[in-house]
Amino acid sequence: MRTRLYLLLALCVTLCWGCVSPPRKNTLEPELAFETILPPPVVDLGPKTRTRPVSTAQVKEEAPTPPPALTPPQTSLHFEFNQFSILPNDLDVLKFHAEYLRSSPSVRARLEGNTDEFGSDEFNLQLGKKRANAVKDSLVNMGVQKDRLDVTSLGKSRPVNTAHNKEAWRQNRRVDVRYLGE
Picture 1 (cartoon, rainbow, N blue to C red):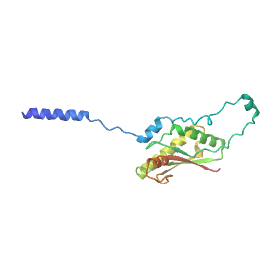
Picture 2: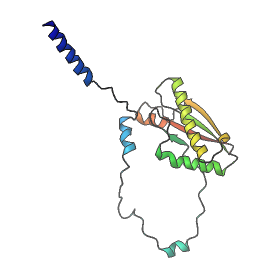
Picture 3: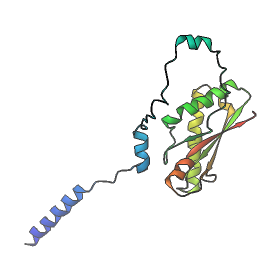
Picture 4: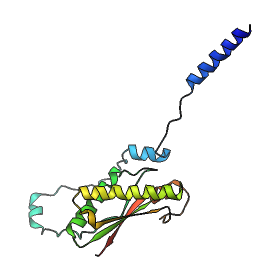
């Protein structure tokens, strides 16, 4: 009788043990996961906002406009939680920084890696440096001279948003590009 009881108990434990699966590691925050997967919605604001076709005669008569001043549109590139790979929506900003640095040979750049408030100081300093180095490597691959780029990590010491919510944390996970010698 005891043998049957032990066998039944061992069978139950084995079945329960087999049903347990390790928890999945989710590197994206739940609300941000949908933002990175889904494209932004298209909003039609009516006929007044639609562009009207331009004839070739109108284009020939207009004087060519000079190119805009070559200044980067934003100085920060943002990252996902605990990640140091450059986001696809920041690639245009990165290309603009590379073009600006290639066209201004006397300008140097300091890449300052920043993190959100989670993790130890040591971890955040390392993550900030990895982020800054990822930006540096990308700029070098785009033709910027390596010796014109300085890398530093500020960790969580200089947040741009001091609130304690997901939007603040998202804003603080960044690399700031600071130009020297302009």
